[in-house]
Each structure stands twice: as structure tokens, then as C-alpha cells.
Length: 203
Image (tube, rainbow, N blue to C red):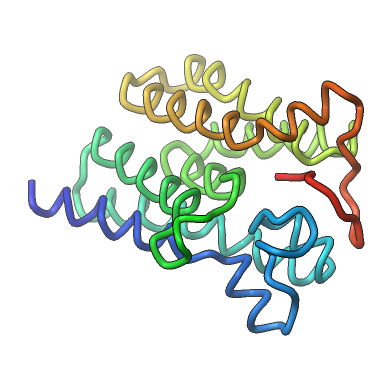
């Protein structure tokens, strides 16, 4: 039990390391919380610093979701604990203790934990995001569609209650964090994925 709680705590702390903020500081870019859309995520870093900075941010956000889940599994945690570890890493990204509990919207970290929990479902979700992003050219819309379909991928490939509950919980939070994007989408004001853009857009 103590080891399980340690897994969850470490996952939250790792999730609290904001890849966007750290990357921007190291590369001399504006703080993503005050520049662009104000969201510390890869899409906003793309606007502020270009593709290289965005790629580093994306990789960091995915890894901090993937690593704690894989570590928990390697150390003998069961599926329920792995699911709780995934949620903890995700919550760390959304509400980071190291950055005033002001985090990102969670897309990349959720993709990372999905790869850790069940990599085929993770790859299907990533594939859905890529197809939607290429088709619609809108990051937030691609993310919302991908996450909306993820529970169905789980029901098809691995219908385990702990996984389904964790993914449903994270999905609801992700939609909540994207509420301003959803309003923009409904008004037809959500902008495309591109560098050098401003406004309340992206994932």
C-alpha cells in the first residue's frame, strides 16, 4: 500500500514538471503562460518558438505520462494502481505544484499515459489525432475527437474497468480544460495549427 501511494505521488510530481515552461526558459522564449494563448502546452510553444521548441515540449509532456506508468508496472503494480498513477501524472500536468497549479490542457500527457496503459489504444488515439489534425488543421478539435473515441478503442481492445474509469475521468477533465476552445469552435473562431499565431487556441 505504501509503495502504491509512492507510485502515485511520484507520478503527480513528475507530471507537475511543465515541459512548456522549462523548454521556454531554457530556449529564451516568452513564458507560455503569458504569451500566445497563455496555455503551457506544445501548441502554444509552437506559436512562440517554432517547431523545435514545440517538439521538445510535446516529447516531455508525453514522457512524463508514459514513464511513471511503465515504472509502476515494472515494479509490480496492478492495473488499478497503474490507472491511478496515470491519473496522477495527468493531474500533475493540469495542476502542477511547482508552477502555482497553473498547467496545460493535458493532451500530450494523456497520450503518454495511454501508451503506458495499453500501447495499441495509445497508438490508435495518436493516429486519430494525426488524421483529424491533418484534415481539419485545428489542434483542439483533433484532440477532442481523438479523446472522445478512446473509450471505444478500450472497449474493443481492453475493456478493463480501472482503465475505462481512468480514461473517462481524464477525458472529462480534458474537455473541461478545453471549454474555451469548444466555445471558439462553436463560433467558428478556433484558429489553425501554425507558428506565430495568437489567441486562445490549441491544445
